[in-house]
Image (tube, rainbow, N blue to C red; front, top):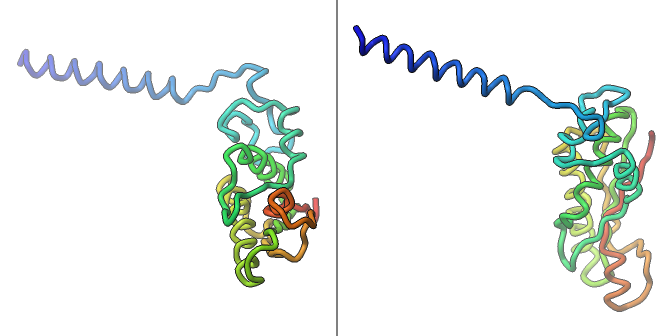
Length: 174
């Protein structure tokens, strides 16, 4: 009988400890400078949770000003430093469900037309995938590739090519 009571006591202690840990993990400590509430709801009010790190309103506005994302030669992976800016656009789209964006993929002049249209589409889709990973519905996102047809720089060297390897977020309605 004594052994059974010891087992029950250990089980009860372990259960209580687990319950305390679960409750502690579920609680959020709010400090006014860490996050702000979303004025319109939408489930994205916790900025720290949404971005994965501390981002203020001012930083978020700066991130939203970035609408062009550049890629390496023949690449379609977004630079790690650009991901937070795409998150900011995702948050804006979630707050405004009537808004939609067109993501344009562009390439430099090298390569065939067909190859560049496909590469531009992969670049645009890379940005779209990040938006959707944050919960933006696909009906708010339109992907389009211009390939090499709409350069912003007209030179025939690396400095021009670098500017043309891009994806652009364009708001169609807000």
